Image (cartoon, rainbow, N blue to C red; front, side, top):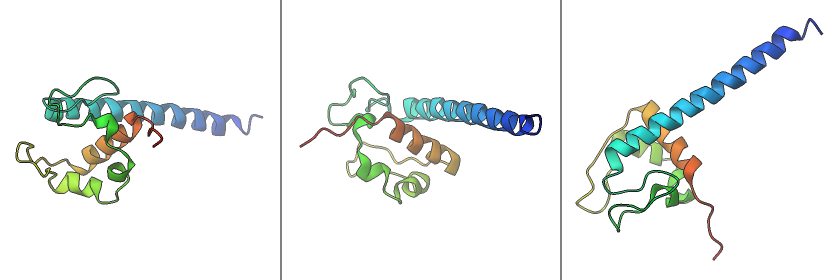
Amino acid sequence: MKRFAPALLAVAVLRSTGSQATDFEQRHAEALLQRMCSRCHAVGKTGTSPNKVAPPFRRLGENKLYDPDFMQRLQDGYSSIHRFMPTFRFGRDDAEAVVNYLRAIQEPQKPK
């Protein structure tokens, strides 16, 4: 048992720091989206978008969030097809945090 104690301790530490990193990443991404997008979009798990034509981020759906190019577009300069949405760019770490956050807050798809 003494032989396994260091390994068990290492696993416990890695699990706890990974969880904290994820929590930090989630808070960081939500803060970024609040600052950059909440004027038009609902950026959390609840709430209504201030702009009625702007979808709540919790309803973006898998097509966009699991598109392999979506994270790259966030880094290159993402803009929408309508003229009122500003173009914005995220660094790689921020883009990854935002995508992970958006995936985490998605509502389950309603059956058709």
